[in-house]
Length: 427
Ligand SMILES: *Cc1c(COP(=O)(O)O)cnc(C)c1O
Image (cartoon, rainbow, N blue to C red; front, side):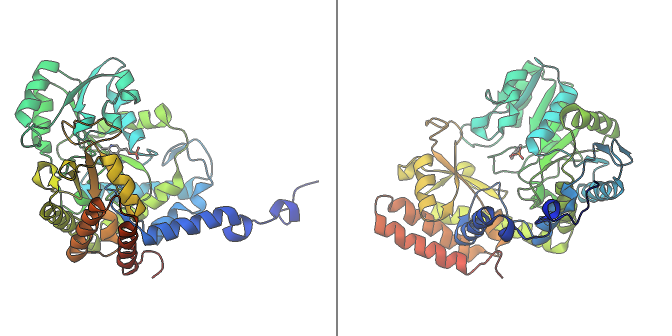
């Protein structure tokens, strides 16, 4: 007997809302909304998406296979998927001034993998920033595929200035002759001279890959140097400062490089693209092209600077003395507390951060002497300089009251009072 859609067993719950179908999951989601509302989110790689981004990312576009690229799919019925992917590609190309874009990478790590697989063979040499100085896992960590597949030569920051030293990077490249150089970092707060990196790469015949995962939103708003005119290929996430759905992307001005990278993304390392997230990316790129987004990114930077200045005033040491971006690294040693302890005690009062090594860190990577802070999420909530000063004093009070339970409870009340003034979802 043919199945009819009105068959009560088969069609059961098809249109019921989550709370009816699955109260367990709905309850967990409610609790997450409350956590977001009540806590101060200072993780530099996180943000709060718009309702429009979440609507597209949670849409019917999750249902379909669309292996291949627009106009060349391996499945029927892809006409709207072609439309959405073309729209996302055109928007992101305009946003960054790129000639070519691939919006299919599932995340930043997959974008990087696709570029490495395009240009490197196992055993080839690549040069990237030392993880303890701000590089990402996918830039050569021994526990990552990059550390296992490639011969990694790491550069670091200068011991005194804690800034990139381009002359010493040039010297290292001259000696090491890498096939590929990575620039763009996870925990380096200063601007990057992408033009200089390209000169270094050209002088040794290397491919330059810029990984703009962190500052992508600042770059879209011209608040940070744009690597697209300089690097051979640019990788990114879409969910950090760019404030889109969780995902990755790759850009280039060289369409020949683009053709090769397309093949590596699919069928090289991925199967069907996550089209619902590509729909979310399209919305994100539209939002990022609006004047309000420029204002937002400017405020992200102003807030980071205000927070760094206020923390310095409270006695913390900021690595490299400040920030040009949304993030900063603080050296906790003046407070005689490790990054691990600081993260835990801050969590207990509702301030969410992550521990991080600082350059030449005397502690183990799991413990660390540093804490990484960022302003994208609190700025999305509408906080400005006065709130950054308030946050700096809340962090300092927490460090001073680590052992005092009633002191910490009072700080948590202050965090609640502050976050209540800047609602996220319930406005
Ligand atoms: C976050 C980040 C990535 C990886 O992104 P995922 O989406 O977590 O895979 C890659 N590179 C840099 C520099 C990053 O900061």
